[in-house]
Length: 269
Image (cartoon, rainbow, N blue to C red):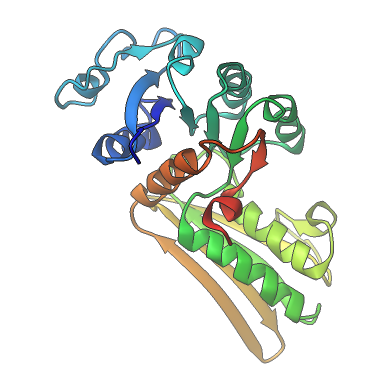
C-alpha cells in the first residue's frame, strides 16, 4: 500500500487504546495521526508516546475529536456507548472510516448510528478477532443443524475491570445461534438466573458471565442434549488480536461506500 491511511485512536489511555497505538505504530500499512482523550484527562496536551512511558511519537493527545478526525482517514474507537455515538457523528462529518469495538451498546444506541452510516463507513463488531468471527459462523451452522432438544448456553469470562455483561462477543454468539434457529434473540434470551428460577425453558439461549483477574476473553457455546454435549470454544490470550483486527477493518474500509459493516464483511466470511 503506497498510501498509508492516517488513523486516530479514541480513549488513548485505556487498555485497548494503548494496544491500538502500539499496533498502528508497528504497522507499515498505516500511521498514527491522532489520539483523543476526554476533557480534563492528564494526558491531554502531552505527546502520546511519552504519556505511555516511551519515546515521543509526534502526536499530541487532544480533547477536540473533530480536529483530530479531520486529519484522518479512519478512527478506531473502543470507548463507551455515549462517547461512540458522539464520535460517529464527528467521523461521518470528517468522512473517516469509523471502526467501533465499543461493547454494551443497546439496540436503541445501535440504531442511532444509522444517520452517520449514510455518510461514512462504519465497521462495528463486538469482537474483532478472526477466530471469534469464525466461531460466530460455526455457531450459526451448528444451531441450524440441531433442534431444540439441544439447549444452548453461551459462557464467557473476562477480566475484573470489564463493566458490561454479557460481553459483546457473547451477544454476537447468541445472535448467531438465534439466527441459525430462525428466531429473534430478544424473544429467547435468558440473561440471568438467581434463586428459584424453575426449569429451563425449551428453546431458550442462556448466558453466563464470569469476571476475574486478568482474563483477556474466553467464550464457549455449549449445545447440551440428553446424553451428549457439543462445545465450541475460543480463548484469547493477548488483546493484540483485537487491535490487529481493528486495524484490518480500518484499512478494509478505505474506498468502501457509506454504510454499516461488520467483521464478517472485512474477513470475507
